[in-house]
Length: 237
Image (cartoon, rainbow, N blue to C red; front, side):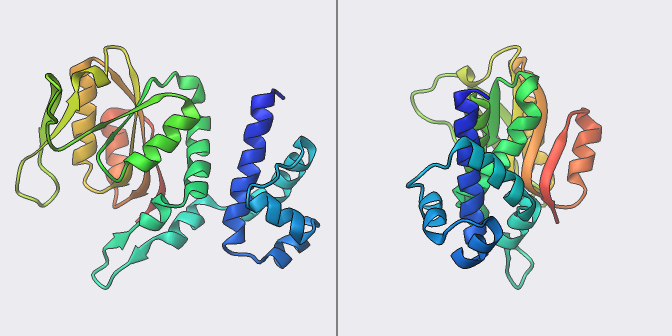
């Protein structure tokens, strides 16, 4: 194992421990791992990194205690009208990093050049995945910014809005031949994501896949059939 891979393995263990600490006490984690509470506390706080051998052993032991889908579901909050808030997911850096690792593992060999999302809530997830894949993240906005002369520009109609919206992406953000992974936190009707794919077409780039934290309804299946690319989601509602 390379030195970089060994460090990533250790950091993955620390993220798992941080997540587990939200559901288990140090006493319970000590019983599970057989490690003293003081040692676990240093790991969780990032004060000490475990050895490569201990990291491997603990990952094998603790990985079954982590279910990414359940971790995301546990953090989604619904109001009395059935609307949901996923900010608790987006703000949990340990969970987001683990999600990004899983996504990156599936796209590592597909030569992704860019991560594309729409401002604003998709940006945290996109940045985490971009960091794991070591590629740039670009995002479309609903307004033109001063200082930028040329944009890719796509009009679309958000679901049930009855109005036309526009997304703008700086011309330099995508180039011909780029392989693009489209990322967002939530997908509902899919119109925003179709607009992002149209931007890829305008640039001569190719959508390599789509990934979302939360999908509502059967839009995921419809997009997969429509574009014949991988479309994945952590939680379906």
